[in-house]
Image (cartoon, rainbow, N blue to C red; front, side):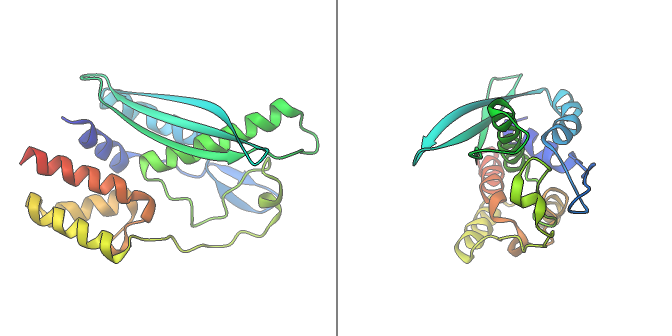
Length: 204
């Protein structure tokens, strides 16, 4: 089984509920630790390993934490990477510099994992008590940005070329991204969908 198929299985089976509660904002959210706890059994099941690393990058005199997630297939060494950035706050009441960096790292790591596993956090205000203004604003629902018309055409073209079972494909979309049809695929998941379809095309 190729690495993209294994990732597809993990995305399908991964359930990472929002187990954390923001008492100030009165909403639930999931943390980086929640995602890791949920995905570890699936990594073992699919013979995969997951490594997360951080680096600090300076942009316009501001420090950004870049979190990189590397998913590796133990059977053949193939890898898939996902990265996300978060900017360190200039200061945070009650936190020293190392705590600010740690909180920023957790935030960046969470979104790198979201990108890799197709997790959508847009339905709830997504923050923790360590993220300043975000924790003080009333949660608002945001509409998820979906794929463009050109991207829809590209997906439909690949479906036609691979001859993939459309019913099974739609079920995978629903299980993985809560998308009932191609038009509802989140923009963040487009690259994953294309990757899976291209791997099917190569196997044909």
